[in-house]
Length: 124
Image (tube, rainbow, N blue to C red; front, top):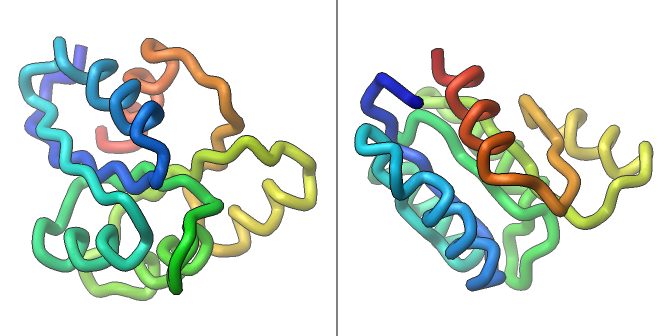
């Protein structure tokens, strides 16, 4: 159980993944989930909301993918932990994510309890 008020920003072009993450945190009353469908929207929400943590897909359409989003967040004055989520799990993919500044690189699929525990660990 997460016992601290948290603003969680989820950035993913896949509706099912966003739904899974939102539903995973539904029973966590102190977690407020915000969603963006691409990196550009995610960056805009990040700048407006100043979330406590960002969960972002790596591969997204548009100008800003997850790696670029992560780099921009980490260069920001109001930075926060970033978890990159991807179906690509080769060591070279993980290395690219960590080099972009990700605190954690999570390979899909993942379980809701694992995700809740990870967020709790990163924000406390």
